[in-house]
Image (cartoon, rainbow, N blue to C red):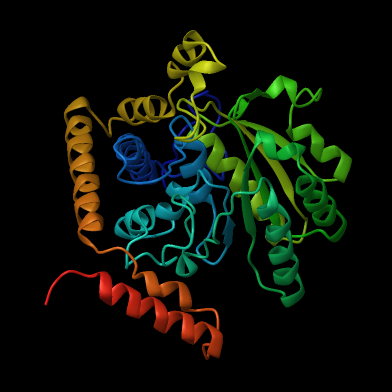
Length: 358
């Protein structure tokens, strides 16, 4: 039997615990996620990318949950789950291609930055409207159920989405039909500027599961092994035909909601400083150090290598030309209608006249 990573909260090790060997991999991915956050916030402020939604403070919940799912499972993200795509094998280069919307962007520049999609990794395109992915995930889970496919679906959303219509509809349908879906709520305490206590009188968000006749569980989202175990249990229930589970991972968003947000306007610096003392990267590193698998020298080297890799990915993405303007005419019709064909020809003639050169 492989050695398992203990929860940072202590206690006995459950049978569904994360193997300690995989905790190294998890920590490396968390460092990559934090390095991407650092760089992308800077890139947006410099005007080099248009938008970014950071995930600092939520890495353990993201990595732990992603590692607990299987490759054939489907993921319906919100917009803070890029690290989930990386865990599932999405190339780092493709992530930055999407941020820039260049000619190698798999979305062909038609999505907002940070709204990733990777079909090969069963990672469905993120969408901006709050909660819409919840009902979509339930539909996919019900389809898998009818096809008798031995898979589960996980969908991510924030505490703010529990106030949406799609949250109610999704959990109600999933509960009634016993859909194999894991509802993973990242309660990061703030729905943009609205604090969690202003959204609901419920003591926890997980207890909302009672209304739909499904299990609900609160997990410390900063405790990676605990998150992994909770999602493994929920997935096992789902594929066994026992229906959905609502998990509430209690985390804290250390940065802004997005690069369009100024959190200093609605929350105190002291609150953020207190949350930084529970930084999930530090907690995970402590487990590795105590297990004799990590030290400060290796940690410094990892951060240097990771930041260098992120920097190289940025250079490569910036060297790729942007999408051709004529691409707006592509991918909608198999045969371009006459009206659009005329418009395309007119644009090409206009662009040719405006280009310098012989």
